[in-house]
Amino acid sequence: MLGLFRKKPREVARFAVRFQPGNTVLELKQGDNLLEASLQQGVAAPYNCRVGACKTCQIRVVEGQPKSLIEREYVFSQEEIAAGAYLACQTSVQSDMVVAWHAGAIEETAIQNARLVEVRRLTARIHRVQLRLDAPLSWRAGQFARLVPAGMPVDPRCYSMVASGENEQLISFDITHYPDGAVSSWMTDTANLGREVLVEAPFGEFGLQPGAAKEQPAPLLCIAGGSGLGAIGGIIAGHARSMDRSTPAAPVLLVVGARDRGEMYGLDELRRVADSANVPLQIDVVLDREPGDSGWQGRRGYVAEHLPQILRQAAEGDPRFSQPDEAWRVLLCGPTPLVDTAIDALKGVGLRAGQMAFDKYEQQRAA
Ligand SMILES: Cc1cc2nc3c(=O)[nH]c(=O)nc-3n(C[C@H](O)[C@H](O)[C@H](O)COP(=O)(O)OP(=O)(O)OC[C@H]3O[C@@H](n4cnc5c(N)ncnc54)[C@H](O)[C@@H]3O)c2cc1C
Ligand code: FES
Image 1: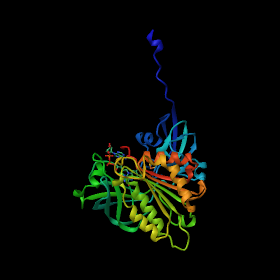
Image 2: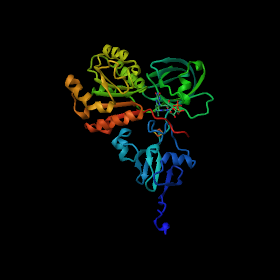
Image 3: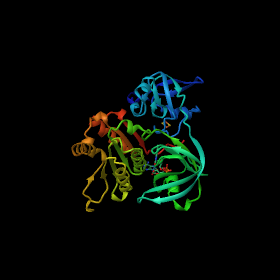
Image 4: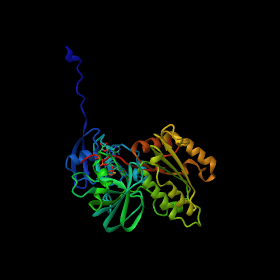
């Protein structure tokens, strides 16, 4: 009798996914992550970060209707979207599909050896870590490298470069130390100075394309949390250094989210760089764990809840920030909750996904 009421296990739909070139066909379940399921079934899919940051896993959906786990406007142009561009690591299988790997999916990256040459404590948790590469390399602030200490049996972790490099051998990262984190605790430990690290770089397109801010002096909203301040600071400093003073510079509104005052770093230096290049820079800091009796007079709570007011006050206080919503370009970098909630808040005041680019410092899934 009870059996009559027992729920039947729900049938999960299965779909045929054909990969081009090669015409390999896999049977995948509804809701499978396309990249993860393909890798599990032995497809040699191109990938790196697995979190939507590097575009290495770009595909073109020739037939079928998958679900994208991120709004594709963040990473692709309207033309690319119309042509069926998706990221395999951000794609959920929902139908039969024909999928082509993007021709330029594998970026021009190099793998090489490096040595840990400097570990400088910036805050209680964040360290500036410098490596000396065996051979010179070029990269932009905001792009990232995959690092793993030589001989450590773990997947490489992604870290963002804090300053651009042109044919350089010294490369720096701001790394948050997690006491039980395999790579971050190794990289921030001075006992490892002189030891070898494997580096693959550069990945990703986060940051400002060279010359972009000169061509289009639209206001730039930068939002940084935790060690994301390193890459964002490097991008702003690069923007300031690229200005020639004869043209009006794009004004920058920087919003920093940190636990407490002890976690803010590099802001005075950033102000100096911006001043010397005549780049208008306004900085707003929001602290979420600053002790109530510390005397901090500034904003408290989370960045997202302050964003509408920060934008309104910036526009009221300086006409250069008083631009229509669609004029802004937005860069967000740091812990995933900060980036996600800030994006929601910005959409709430009328900004669109296509104006925003982000780098989420997400923990990578194990292979
Ligand atoms: C594109 C990209 C760029 C990144 N850039 C940077 C960067 O510039 N600086 C930087 O510090 N990190 C950055 N990260 C995060 C970094 O790649 C690692 O995930 C992080 O350093 C943890 O690695 P781990 O080996 O130390 O920890 P794991 O051994 O992977 O994890 C062990 C434990 O550490 C803790 N932990 C690890 N990661 C997190 C997290 N993100 N949030 C909360 N707890 C965590 C957890 O307790 C976890 O159980 C980036 C990530 C991506 C995807
Ligand atoms: S692996 Fe998909 S974007 Fe990096």
